Image (cartoon, rainbow over all chains, first blue to last red; front, side, top):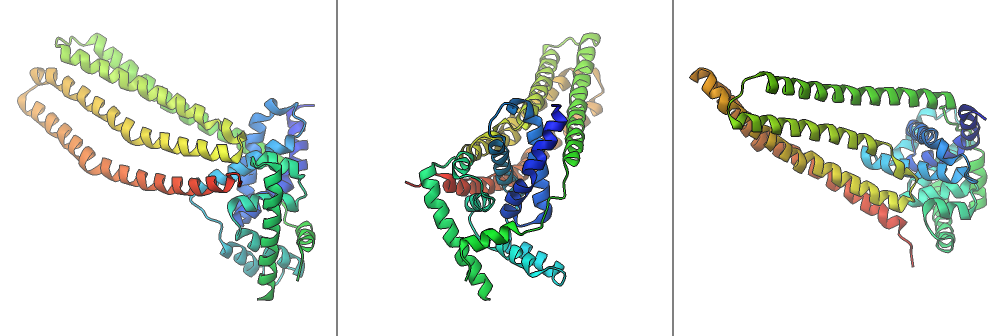
Length: 164
Length: 199
């Protein structure tokens, strides 16, 4: 398989989840697209080193997480609730109830800490716990406790948000 | 009231899709690589040309004083240092550590920012001191070869530049860099804490 074909296959299998991770982390569609593009540029540059890796998604996620972390630090951008609110406002009338719920969920994710945002988007995308532990560098035992806490926090935030 | 499973189903219902295709990524890769390579090439060619000219002037001009030869050695060292710094920066751009665990990556970022700060301030200051010293040494022989008013004008301008650089421009630059670095380190430390294992 040529490098381009392999890359296309990897991109199609992972881009949606990486985009969700970046969107969950930044709360902004354009920034999420930029970060996803940057992530896959790094994937392309390192593809030869990882041809024989069993779980290619693990290191793609790790590149994405690190790209998100460094991007916000360098650009001094902080995820803001207003961003997601803007999405709701600008698209206001045309969005369906489903989209509003998704936007509201992103708004709640934006209120979590950076590492919590990263972990929960992976949980929501059903990434196995063992893989999340490898990506984030947290032991599986601690990760389970952490995930339990983040789930509770997110559910509370969402329900509180829905009431108002 | 919704439970986490309900939130999960909302998540899976989302229609937001990335606007970037794999072709866009490959286009950007080739554009970035070309842009970066040409920028580095221009800097390298510039420095090589400056060094060649310097060697030519050194060999062809009948300099008699040891101070001028010392000035030439200093200029050459400055050029070499600049070229190695460009190559080192290029190697750092490869982002090998992006594959590290987030906690380790944050540590790398902290170190990288600190190194950049040292390069931009302390090392650049030493570089400038040597360059200025080279000019001073060079002007000694020029003073013997040119008219007095030319020598005085050149010396006055050189010293005015040094004063402006050290007492006005450099402190502003250092202050700005320090504030930026402190901000970055603070943010990185906050992140680092989040990735520390909770006992």
